[in-house]
Image 1 (cartoon, one colour):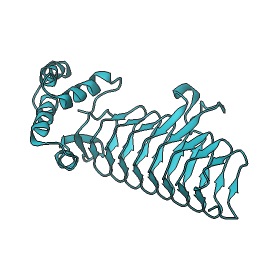
Image 2 (image 1 turned 135 degrees about the vertical axis):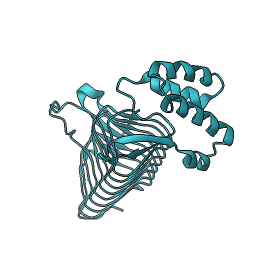
Image 3 (image 1 turned 180 degrees about the vertical axis):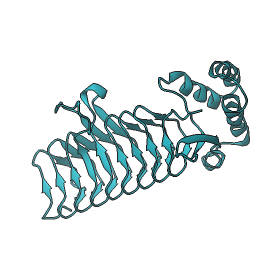
Image 4 (image 1 turned 90 degrees about the vertical axis):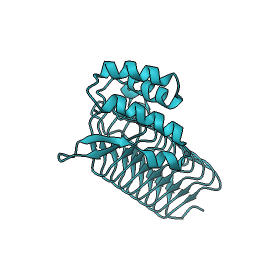
Length: 259
């Protein structure tokens, strides 16, 4: 299961079922759980904990120092959940001391080639990062989010659950749950409705989708100010848990909302 050319630090802890390909390097303070496969020429630095049944393809770099000038070598970590697919040249960095210390990846995500998750980011479950999708530091991504190719998310940005971000979008504001976002002429992201097709595929019925559409129109269609939209959404949220999550996301934000 371990190729003879792989270099594994004696302090690393790998389950007996883990396989490691040729010329891969696994450092100290790395833990890898059962069923995970590590391809050839992969570098994993610690402290990093990787869960079960992940597929890590060749040339990935996981757990390297954060790309932050404030980092001074303090102990920080990378946590990766279960059943993630991590394709070629993907890079995940550890956290920073000032940013909470941890970069977190959830379960059942797909990270395609050349994707990047920077320091102190949190990625949920069942997400898809298409080729070259990139997160700056301190970004939070909800569950079931799809980032198309060449998407870039500004530091400290948030993308809510079930959002779909179109190809080449540069996100400078927070994206509430359920939205579809596409690039305009200058590649800045603009809301383009809700992710109806994705919601249908995940079992949302017509009533739930209609409530989300009403929430979207309240915030994005017409001349409501943000405060006026919040008041109207609060009324809608009394009858819909989906609208409540939409409103809660808006209320929790510290950065500008994408509008």
